[in-house]
Amino acid sequence: MDRRTFIESVVAGAATFAWSPPARAAEKGALAPVRAQIEKQHAGNVKRLQDWIHQPSIAAENNGVSEGCDLMIRLAKDAGFDTAVRVPTDGQPGVFAMLDAGARRTVGLYFMYDVKQVDPAEWSSPPWQAAIVDKPGFGKVVVGRGAVNQKGPEAAFLAALHAFRGAGVKPPVNLVLVAEGEEEIGSPHFPQIVRRPEVQSALSRCSGIFMPSAEQEPDSSVTITLGAKGVIELELTSSGELWGRGPKKDIHSSNKARVDSPAWHLVQALHTLVSADGNDPAIDGFAEKARPISAAEKAMVAEGARRMDESVMKKQLGVDHWVHDVNWIDALERLVSRPTVNIEGLVGGYTGPGGKTILPHKAVAKLDLRLVPDMKATEALASLKSHLAKSGFGDIEVKMTGGYDPNSTTPDAPLIRAQMSVYKRDGLSPILWPRSAGSWPGYVFTGEPLHLAAGHFGLGHGSGAHAPDEYYVIESTNPKVQGFDGAVRSFVEYLDELSRV
Image 1 (cartoon, rainbow, N blue to C red):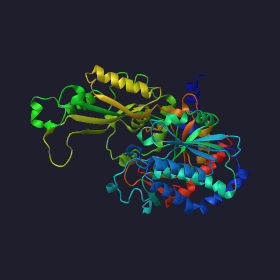
Image 2: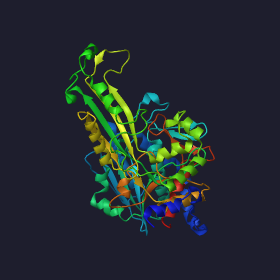
Image 3: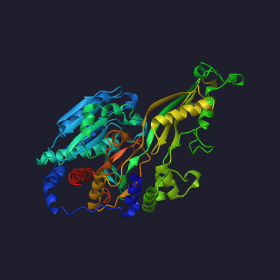
Image 4: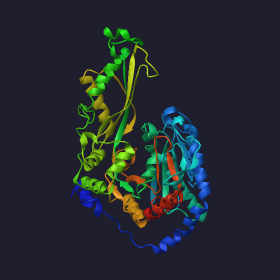
C-alpha cells in the first residue's frame, strides 16, 4: 500500500476518524498544581500580552521589528527557555530558543512576532493600546494589532510555561522554538533561520512542530488542519522606461491620442493571467503539477460542509454568491484544492480627490498566487515570467517579495492525534480539514530534510486578523468559547498529551 492510499484509508470519512485516549485519572492529578497556577497568574499573563501588543513590529514598514525581536527573546527567557538568541538574516532577525526539561520527547514551536500594517483611523480602539473592552456575545476581549494573529495565542502558550514554573513542575516535553519577524511579508528569509546547522540539529530531534492558535469558533466548533496552501507574493510594474513605449514621466492626458499607456499595458497583461471572469488561473504551466483533490479529502470536505453553516460564512465574508454560482460543497472543495491568482492592489497615476488629467508613466499591481500540493513557489514564479514573455509582456518587471511551498501532514501523525485527544476530552468533536486556504511557512519543517509533522493548536477565540479592531477573548461570557485561561489550560494539556502519544 503506497503512502497516499494509506492516508486515504485512515481518513476515508472524517466523521469516522477518532483517537480514543486511555483513561488518565492518575495523571490528571499531577497537573492540578499547574492548572491552579493559571488562574493565580491571570492578571500577569494578560498584562504580558498587552505589553507585547504595545510594541509595533511591522516588517512591511520596518517599524519596531528589531525591538520586537528583543522582546520576543525576553518573553522566551521569562517563560523558562534556557537559551534564546537573535538569529540574523538578510532581512529581519529571527529567534532560536531551547528549553531542556530532561524529558524523553522534544516538540518544536513556530512563532511569529511581526504583525500587519494598521490605519488607526479605522479602529474603534487604538491598535497599540491593547484595551480590554466588552464585546457583545463574547465578554471581555483585548483589542489590538496582533491580538489573535498571533500574539494572543502565543502569549497563552507562554503563560502555560509560566504555570509549570509557578507550580514547580517541569514541562513534560523539551521545546525548540523558532520565531521570525517576516511572516506577514511572506517569510522571505525564514529558511535562513531554520537551515542553520544548530537549528536543524535541534529540530531534527522533534516529534513535530506546531503554531499556537485560537481554533474555537463562536459555535464551539474547532478545526484540525492537515496542511496549508503555499503562496508567492509579487509586484508587477509597467513603466514607460521599462517598456520602451509610453512616457518616462507623467504627462497631460490629452497625449493619449498619440502616446501609449503603461497603465493600460499592465491591465492587459493582468487580463491574460486568469479566465475572462477572473476566477481561474490561465498562466501557462502554472497549475500543471497541482494535485487534484483526493477521495479522502472530499470526504473531509463533505463532513465539514455538513457541520458548517453556509449562510453564516457568507455573512462573515460579506458575499452573496460563490464563483460560478457553485454549491456549498463545491465552494469548500475549491477553497482547499484550487490554486489561485489574486490582485491584492492596483495603483497607477492619480488616486486623490477629484480628477487630474494625466497619462501616468507607471502602474503597479500587487498579486498573490496560492499553491496546492505538488506545486513549487520557484516553478510558479518561472511560469508567470515565461507566460508574460510569451504573451508580449516581457518588459513588465516581476518582483517576488515573499512566499513558499505548500505543506501537508498526515492525520495519523502523533502531533495530530494528540490534538484530537485534547479536544475530545474537552467535549469537542473537531472538524478534520485537508488544508488551510491561507498560508504559513510550514514547508521548511514538513519538507527536506526534516520531514516533521506540522500544524496549529489551541482553544480560545479571536478574529479580525489583518483587519481593524482585531481581538482575542480574555474573559468569555460565551459558554461555547474558552477565555484566556482556558486557552492556557489547553496548551498545558497538549504538552502533556504530546509526552505520551
